[in-house]
Image (cartoon, rainbow, N blue to C red; front, side, top):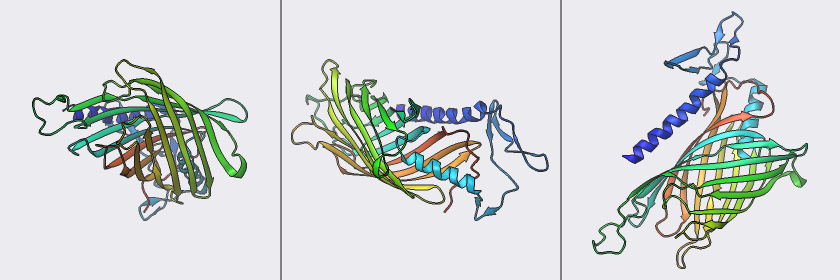
Length: 346
C-alpha cells in the first residue's frame, strides 16, 4: 500500500511542476497568425489548470511530424548535445524513475527510485563556470532483506519487508572552464558531498561523506564521449553505523541524430571498498537509453527511456532494471527560438 502511495505522490509532484510552467509564463503575449488568430490557445484541464497546446495550422506536416525551420532545428540539436554534457551551460531538472528487480535472498525484491537531480550552472568569472549537481533520491523498496521460510528461532527476523522514504542526498560542485581545453576536451573538477538524509536505516549510509569529483568529455559532430567519477569517504558517522569508502564511475558514449534523438550507452558503477570479504565490491549496470527533445507549450523537455542489465553486483544485488526520465530544460544563453517538434520522429 505504501508503495502505491509514494508513486501516486511522485506522479502528483511531477504533474504539479509541469502545470506550473504555463502559469509562470502566462504573462507572455500570445502568438498570432497572419489572420489575427491566437495560436497555442490554452486548453482547460480543470479549474485553475491549463496547458498551452503548440498547434499551428500554417505549418506543413510530413509523416506525422512538424516541419522545422533551420533555426528551430539548430536549437533542438544544441539542447540535445548540451543534455549529453553533464557540465554544460544548461539549467535542467530531471525526474528520473528507476525500477530494479531480483533483489534479496529470494531474488523477488524490487526497488523503485525517483531521482530529482537539478543541474544549475553559475558563471563565476569571465572564463569559469561553477556547475551545481544535486541528486535527491526518493525510494520505495520491498523484500530486499526478506528471507523466505526463516525458522522462528533464527537470530535475524526481518519484520519490516518494505521501506519508503528519502535516501542520502549527493551534491557535486564542478569548476569548469567555459571554453574547451586542448584537443577539444571539456572538463570539470571539484568536491562532492554525501548528506545523511535517509529516513530509514535501510535507505541511507548514516554518514556525512566528502571527496573529489571529476568529469572529462569530448563532443565532436553527433558524438559525445566521456566519463564522470567521484570518490567518497565518511568524515562523520552515526552511532552503530559503518564507515563509507565508495567510488562512482560513469563512462558514457552518446550519439545524437538529426531528429534530435540521442542514443546513449553508459554504466553507473559503484565500488564499495569496505564490503565484507568474499562479497563483490562492484555494482556494474550496463545502461542503454533513448531520449528525445520536444516541447510542451513553450517549455522544452526531454523524454528518456532505457533498460539496465547488471553485469556484476554484490550478493543479493539486482539483475536488471528499467528507467524513464522527464527533464525540464532552461537554456541560459538568452531566450531560444521556438521548437515546433511536438512528438517523436521515426
